[in-house]
Image 1 (tube, one colour):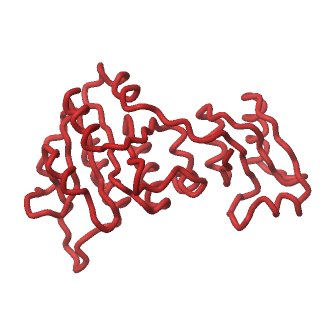
Image 2 (cartoon, one colour):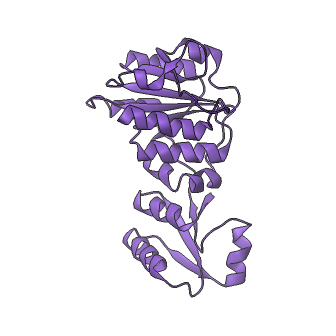
Image 3 (spheres, one colour):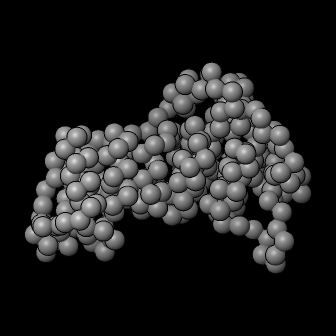
Length: 239
């Protein structure tokens, strides 16, 4: 079992159909949010327990709960095949591949952008990647409950599978061979790869990309946070 903390993440989890075992709130909590919470919980047949304030505070453990905690089952991952199978009829499907993103806040922020820009599926690596935790859930503002996410052990193998299914692979990298991200026509099935915060995309992954792109920098700092870069690239692709 794991927990979701915070008002927006808990509401998003309810509305997305996430399996919630129980919602915890302080005794006597009032206001518009708690009225909406109780209404949504009742509609979805989810039990709400009101705890004495001191017991609720013991469960917070330093998290900014905003007065609400949800106990849920572990995250339900999709398979790559499941993600691809529903995209056969879509004209310009968009898949996001995350190559060893290790910071949970970066992962959460990327997933939030992915949901906002209509990404059809996300692949994350099993090794050297942040797991789906309460921090990721909260940072994503509940977005992970609306995304199909697959965990893969061999990213290169999955890239080849995506190519066999008509996807063009675009890697974000600062290499000399990459091109300005605005120069590509993205009207095609796209699989965008974002790399590790420090090392970027691994060499073998780079070799399997059809296009390599970068975001031109005008300032003295020559790189963006990976979550910011992901948001910029996803916005351009969707545009």
